[in-house]
Image 1 (tube, rainbow, N blue to C red):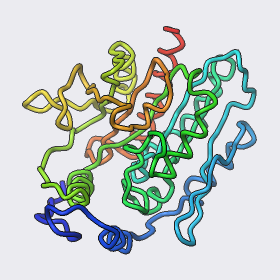
Image 2 (cartoon, one colour; image 1 turned 30 degrees about the horizontal axis):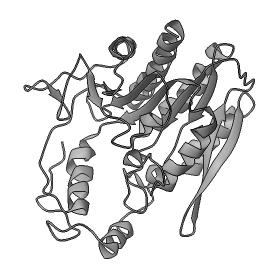
Image 3 (cartoon, rainbow, N blue to C red; image 1 turned 90 degrees about the horizontal axis):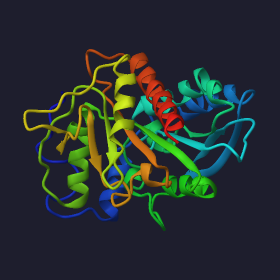
Image 4 (spheres, rainbow, N blue to C red; image 1 turned 45 degrees about the vertical axis):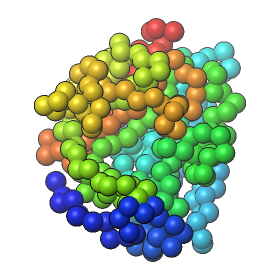
Length: 307
């Protein structure tokens, strides 16, 4: 694991960032990969089999990022809706490519049973810059609420609004990486003027359930499927995963709506957030993508069987 810096290089400890600090942070960010060639090109390849739409356009300076969604070709209002989101934190690679792999390899299996709505890369600026935040140092995955300060979150909410009460299942695909501890948590503490408390990174896959509407059997069905692909994270010595009590093997709970998390954007009875661990020596990028795709399939299968 990377060494955590003693003091974050931007700002004054104990003082929240202002515009100057946010500008300094942004000036340090560099494009490290291409949304167009790695994501948009793959979405285009799906166009012959699915309906593809642009649901928004991000503009950060001279950079423009079309926000793309993939829908079932033969949308049928009599069928339940399944929502798959990825790349809410753009740096979490398998969230994006796992969603695309699901569409490419598995979506056809559900053609006559559900309407699929997939937003594979909610935060493309974050994808290109390998960042958790957007260009304004805002975390999209804490910004899913009315009058959201994050345009990524606001655009997704507009996309989902017409079907939010008809969604049967929503799965939001994430990763927990070593850089969460070495970069992103220290940056968060510095931005908010709070002390950074070192923690740990779970070694393996886990899920986040909704503490306001827990669905333990649903979560365990997903865990069982993913375990065929990659290992499940064990709880630490205190019985926690990422600082939260493990309520079951590989499962923690958050109040999704209270925290403004993406998984709260619909009224789906079945919701979960996946967390893949890509830095494990026991997992390859291919396994991480496959684990995300397996989680989506298992989640849809359970939801359909328990409608």
